[in-house]
Image (cartoon, rainbow, N blue to C red):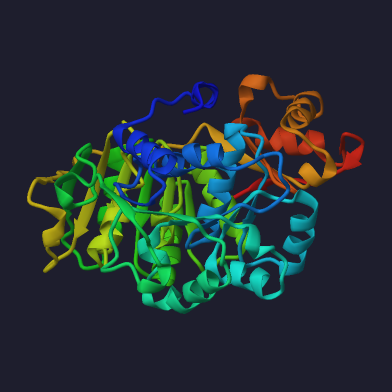
Length: 437
């Protein structure tokens, strides 16, 4: 394994990652990995894969299929952070395919991270030279191979005739791997603990709600958890919005996330949560997969998970790598803990006396320029310090997108920052600076 990349990333491989790498590099077989969420499966396949791809070639050599755009973007970002010299692109719906086609011609990626529908679109339009692809990775294969996706997957595999090796990864196993995936000789690695896919570093609690409408109990639970980061899971989009608005009215700083939001709204919601400027994320199960936010302290099931697989993926948002976490089931009258959650749980008693909602130290601003405008993180730091009156210690996480940027800044300085930067230029270009709420 490339020790320089491991040193740069600051990680030590766990047993699952080492065994996966060994199987990919030294067996010549297809590889199936089943391991709890948060155990580092993205690194497990990328670290050996980059040793098998040629950075000197402009050919597309590997396709990674993922069930959603967030995982596509995140996986491409992980590869970039490795500094392997390989070029990558994330391909997903919600933006014009023509834009992606232009970028494909410019970037000439050796690896793409794609959702099935968007990859089919590019294959059908011959935007991708399918004949050069030798490696196929299916991440979250239990989701990608569900019945709703199978027709798309069959079409993709029929259009990739040169596939020589396959790697399939998930936290939960699909009932069977369909014949059309055409797995050859296979190495199967199962790292689930007690066959559940749930880390033993997660402590389980039940919280009794005296009312069927559990909002008041949820509010009190969150107050008792203080400033810790928490994801509240619900099963329906309208319930997410109702719950988030209730908590906002109670004084909590909240982000919400579901599939009905516009792409930029979803990005902003996740960014505010990941940079700590909104410590509570209220979401459907859309946030249960493909998000690698390393320090989520609590998972709260306001609605019971609809399946065991949903439960596994929800709780996998906490206790990632070697961290510990807590998961809470808020149970109304007549509701019971699902059998698959196990019997080792404690009843959580919410204290009578509770503090006010804690306010995060940071807030988030939007800057209307990004990579395509030749703006870098250092340009943003310089702009905020010189024009916005901030010190470097008052600037947190910076995320530079193609056409805009998000920046975490000291919450108490935001009003003054907006006043000072109004009408100012960054690298000689007028830009918009706004608070993301």
